[in-house]
Amino acid sequence: MLQNSDSCLETWMGQEALAEAMIPVIGRLYRENNVVTSIHGRSLTNTSTMNILKAHRFARRVSKEELLLEETAPLLDNLARLQLGSAEIDIGRLNQRFKDAGNGASLEQFLRAELAEILGKRGDDRTATDVVLYGFGRIGRLVARLLVEKAGSGRGLRLRAIVVRRGSENDLSKRASLLRRDSVHGSFAGTIRINEDTNTITANGVRVQVIYSNNPATVDYTAYGINNALVVDNTGLWRDAEGLSQHLKSKGVARVLLTAPGKGDVKNIVHGINHGTIADTDRIVSAASCTTNAITPVLKAINDRFGVIHGHVETVHSFTNDQNLIDNFHKGDRRGRSAALNMVITETGAAKAVSKALPELLGKLTGSSIRVPTPDVSLAILNLSLENGTTKDEVNKYLREMSLHSEVRNQIDFIDSPEVVSTDFVGSRRTGIIDGLATVSTDKNLILYVWYDNEFGYSCQVVRVMEEMAGANRPSFPVTDVVQEAMSVLAALGTA
Image (cartoon, rainbow, N blue to C red):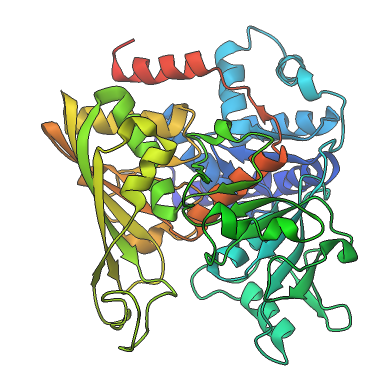
């Protein structure tokens, strides 16, 4: 029966009321228990009523049905009563598991069994790790936003300082302003205060010391109460072990993470692919590049299923701060020409860098890049020759399932809208979004189009690597059963 306009509005208002009532529960779980809630990877913490409703609507991509607030609201209420320890809980997946495998148990009984590991352990028992951002450019400021967003109880990763070269007499206020306002990513979600006397910026209660230095080897971080710090080098000035080891000479530094491709024997980590290779003895690690992070999970998925003989990666990449706004001298070829007016052919090491995270593709990929006059969001075009033939429908179905039910679901996303363009992916927390309608498949030749927010999506990967290095990961629920997830993908493809 068709609803009239009044009943449609009444239903919507009821849904709004349910979502509004969920916000304080989500907030309490976060502040008091350090429990981060989400729906199929869409975070609910510090979000709005509309975003909660949109997250529930998104769930139909997973279960073919919209997630009902009438189901998730009582689930959240039960979680709030269980005195849980620190965790990341996907209530969309948890609700689906209850419906599929509750076996007649009450919701509370199911949750007690499912979350037994953290039951009654209210609070955050993680060790706090001091973090220093060395450099405060595009990636540094976005990583800062993410660390403030994840601050919770102050355990886990704790942003303590940024190190920059003094640019002007009012440097502190300018740094704070750049954190507060961003032409691409919008305003900072919260409040920012500066203290000229202590040279600090306080963002949503997180007090950050601003340190001025031109030398990574001579900063005494212990003078600011910072110890055993993880230094995140966002400058890109040093990319090998010798250069980056300068940080380790400063008092209070334990480990270093580079937000650019590492050279020599520096490990290049793409979270979701080879983060398990980070050892306690690794004092210097690289988070690779934005493009490498965007394409490696997709390439692994394709190689695992169809086998990659060889391929070429072409990135249509937004211009970066390295290029000139108008024509002027630049040591790099073509990069001296106006970034705002031209498409600029340049080089990329991303294709070769893939093999550092995915050795089975060593020598199988080439790559090049075209810089274009957009400030953010890039597009990687993967032209692959496969061992096993496939069709557009088969490969799209497979990649969609991988984005929902695999170990790389935090990295890969999938979309099949005929109307999306680059700005639709600003702020994406996934590192690569497959544009299913653009896929071209002719038996053993496959072309994939992968969008990626080369700033924010990459920054999310950087934080994931930081958490891995610091041992600051919250346990995730429901617990992933790798075998079951693989069976889910195969079943969806009709090959189980």
